[in-house]
Length: 82
Ligand code: FES
View 1 (cartoon, rainbow, N blue to C red):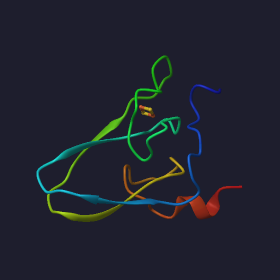
View 2: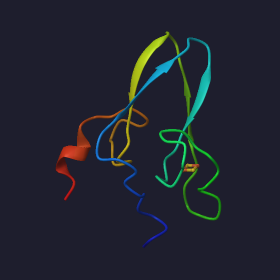
View 3: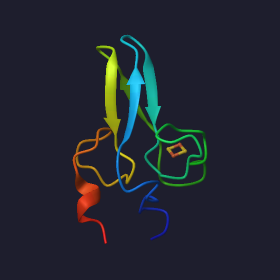
View 4: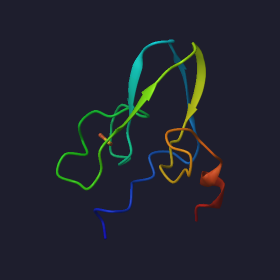
């Protein structure tokens, strides 16, 4: 079980300024120390990061609770967490 449920890194989004044309790796496991992005901590788990390619420059709300239904963006799912 522990390998299939992501860690809640933060009950809320991470608002990050992204640059058009750049790729970012969103942490799906929740264990990264560099939230919301992957730092390799998922190794050995069932998770792998999700690539996000910015089409435009601006602020993106990345999911911090890792329970979003719209990875890698926050969809408000953290409000339903216990
Ligand atoms: Fe979480 Fe890589 S550290 S997906």
